[in-house]
Length: 55
Image (tube, rainbow, N blue to C red; front, side, top):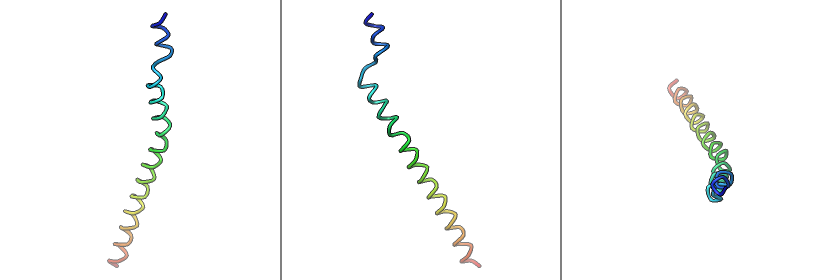
């Protein structure tokens, strides 16, 4: 019976760890996406700037 309880209610620390990871995950993904977009825009602007300077 105690084994069954352990399966149903896993260690609280593990549960808390998983919930904190899940809480931060969307924020981390959002930050990474924004950084990638900014880098992409920066590269495009740089290319246009270089192209215009050559003309």
